[in-house]
Amino acid sequence: MRIDQGNGNGNIPDRSSREWCQEALTRLHAGRPESALDAARRAADLDPGAEWPYRLMSLAHERLGRDADAVRAAERASDLACGSWSARLRLAAILRRVPGRWCEAAEQAALARKFAPEEADPEVMAGDLALLNGEHADAERHYRAALRTDPGHPQAQVNLGLALLRWDRPRPHHDPAWPVDPRETGRARRALEVWSRQSRLLVAVATVAIGVCALFFDWGAQAQLGGFAVLVLLVPLTVRQARRVGRWPYVPAMLSRDPWLGASVVSAVVSVAAFAAWLLLAAVPSVPAALDPVWAGLAGLVVLGWPALAALRALAGAWRGRPLLALAETARADERSARRNTGVTLWIVLGRTWSVLVPLLGGALAVEPRAAVVAVAVPYPLVRGYLRARHRDNGWLLVATALVVASAAACAAGGLLGSAWAWRAGLGALGAAVVVFAVRALRAWWRGAPGPWRASLIMCDLPMGSAPSVPLDAEVRQTFSYARGIVLSYGDDRGPRVAGAVASVTSSGELRLIAETEAWAAIEADPRVAVFATDPLQRRFWVEVRGIALPDSNVLRVTPKQVSVGEFPGRHQRR
Image 1 (cartoon, rainbow, N blue to C red):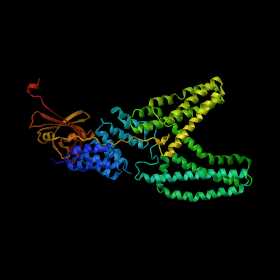
Image 2: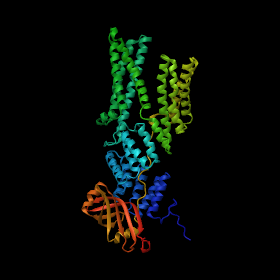
Image 3: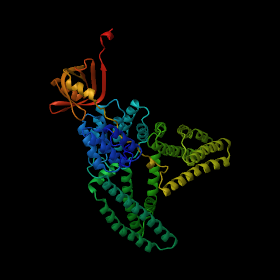
Image 4: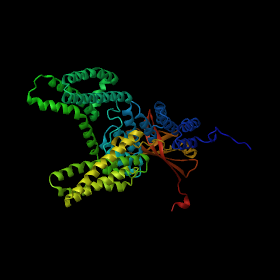
C-alpha cells in the first residue's frame, strides 16, 4: 500500500482546479491567507484559463497587505472573464485601496451592477464607495437596494446604519480620487492638528499665567514680557510643523472636506491673533475704560475657545444623523462590527437624551418647576432602543441609562411635589451619568480599546468577489463544438430578439460568438444574453447558457452566469 504524505498541510495532490479553489476559500474563511494563496496558485497551475483561482489569489494578497499583487491578480481574472461580475467586483474592491485609482474602482463596481442587477454584492460595493466618499444619501440608496435583494445581507445592514448616522470616514480630509497616497495627506493633517493644538494650549496657558501674575503678584510688566516671549516661541514651532505638512497644494481642499480640521486650524489662528492683541492692549499705558470689555473678551476667547469648540463638536456629533433608525438596521445583523456599532449608537442616543434633559430641567427650575414633568418622556427613545438592541456593554451603558432615566423621573417628581431632595437626586443622577461616561471613555483610552464615541464606529468589510465561476462541462462544450445551429437571444427597446450565431468555446470556459450586426448595438446597451444550442450527436439534448456578452474585436465574448441542460420529449412524451 502507498501512502502519500502530501506537502505537510494535508493537501491531496490529485485534486482538480475547482477543488483547490474550494480549499483556498475554506482556508481564507479560516484566517489562513498564506495557505490559501498556495492553494489558489495550485488551482491556477492546473487550469491556467480559469479566472476563479486569480480572484482567490487577489483576496489572499489583500489579506496579507500586498495590494499591488492583489491588483495584478484581480486584473488577470477580469481579463480571462471580462463579463464576470465577480471578477469586476473583486477588481473594484482592491482598486479602491490604491491611491489614484478610485475612479477605476467606481467604474468596475458600476459594471458589476450592470452585469448582475439581481445580486446584492454589487449594490453593497457601490454603497461602500459612496460611504467612503462621504455621500451618505447615495450610500443609503444602494444599501436599501441590496437589502431588497437580500434582506439578511450583514454588510448592507451594518453599513446602512453608518450611512444613517452620517458616519465620518477614517480619513475625512482625503479625497479617494486624489493621485496621492493617503498616508501623505494623513501626515499633513497630523502636522496641522499638532500645530493648532500646541498653539492654542500655549497661548491659553500663557494668558492664565499672565493674569495670575498681574493680579496676585503684581508682576504685570514681567508677565507681559513672558507673553511676547511666547509669541516668539510660536515661530519655530510653526516653521517646524509647516515643514512636516509637505502636501501644501492639497491643504485648502483638506480643510474644506474636513470642517472640524478647518475649524481647529482657524481657531488656532484666531487664538494667537487674540492673544497678540490682548498683549498689545495690556502694554498701552492708559487703556480707556471703554476697551476693558474688549480686553476681557480677548482673554476669554483665548482661554475658552478650545473647550467651546470641543463642546460644540461633541454636541454636533450627538445630533448628527438618525441613530434610532441606524440602531434598528444594525441590531439585525449578526456580525462583530454590528455589535460594536450598536453599543456606540446607544451611547450617541444617550448623549442626545442628556443634552435634551439639561436645558429642559434648567429651564423648568428657572421658570416653572412643574414643567419638569415633561422630562419623563425624554428617555423613552433611549429605553426603547436599548431594549430592542439587547446590547450588553459590560454594565457601563446600563448604569448610565439607568441614571438618566432615574434623573428624569426624580426631577419630574420634584417638580410635581415641590420636593427639593427629589430635585437634588435627579440632578445628581444626571451628573453621575457624565461621570460614568467619562470613566468608561478613560478606561477605553487607557486600554486602547473602542470607546463610547463616534470615532469607534467601523465599516463592515467582508471579502467580496469570491463566488465560484460557472463552468462548462465536457457535454456542454461538445454541444457547442458540433452544433449546426445556434440561437442568440438578447433584448432591445422593442423587446426580446433572437438571431442566428456561430459559436466556439475557449479554454477559459467562455463562448465566442459571431452574430448579426444589428445585435451588437443592443448588446452594448444590455449585455445580458442567452445562447441556445442542440447537440446533433445526441438529437434530444439541448443547452442554454445565460451570461454576459461583450464585444472583442469582431466577436462577442460570452461569460456564463447560468447553464441549463435538458432533453426534448420523445414520441411517447409529445402528448
